[in-house]
Image 1 (tube, one colour):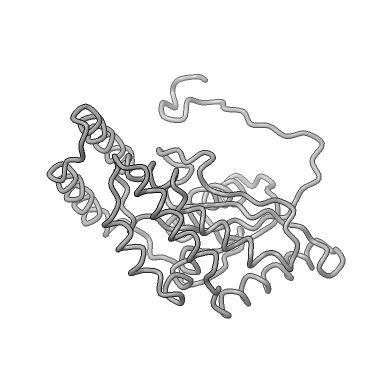
Image 2 (cartoon, rainbow, N blue to C red; image 1 turned 90 degrees about the horizontal axis):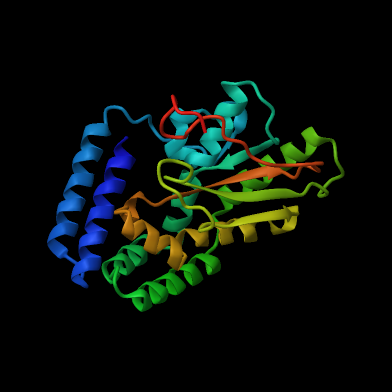
Amino acid sequence: QTARTIFHIGKMVKSFEGLSGRQSPVLREILNGIQSSFKEEEKGRVFPKSREYILPYRLITKELVDSVGGKNANLGEVANRLQLPIPRGFAITTTAFEQFLEANGLDDIIRKGRQELDLLDPELIMKASGRIQNLVLRGQVPSAVQSAILDAYEELEYMQGGDAGGLKVALRSSAIGEDSDLSFAGQYLTVLNVPREKIIEEYRRVLASLFSARAISYRLNMGITFEDASMSVACLEMVPAKASGIMYTRHPYNLLEDS
């Protein structure tokens, strides 16, 4: 409900700025104040974030959404609440992402980049996006995070019973806010058929997609601050499916209305 409220307020701010042809610092300040108020109200209801870099799906529920993002949390719910099958795998948490930023000194650079952004100046957004993405792609994943990821991969490989190094996985974005009231469809990265030796490299690419120009623009339009943007990653075994698809049985917002 909070995300939906901020979403609609952000849309109103965007509409006003679009009509006036310029950014409104006053409205942006009001929007930031509303966001801060919501955060204060929710502090008592928010579950503590996990300190782990890796979480298997058997331990994931919606209460861990701040640690694993929307996609991973929903997969955990499907597996643990509904007892339905999902591909085997694990979540690389937002704690791992934060450790990556800290180890590479990217926090201050990202904050500075945010201050230079102007919603009505796409060129500034493109420049900031390219600069931050390049830094992320060149960054070093801390050894503790690398070890946690590769150990979890090897455990997954052992469970599958395959040859050493033969397991291919999908690395999928699971950002905070993704698969919720807001839609980030097509803005973050998914990489398929990733072998062991490419996991860390592709993990960085998924992290970098958090700062694509499209994603930054969307978050600005929706009133989502840089501080609220964080990336978890789903690591899932590739499944040789005969068919695939998706079906909605209920309207996503009105559960009493048939789709």
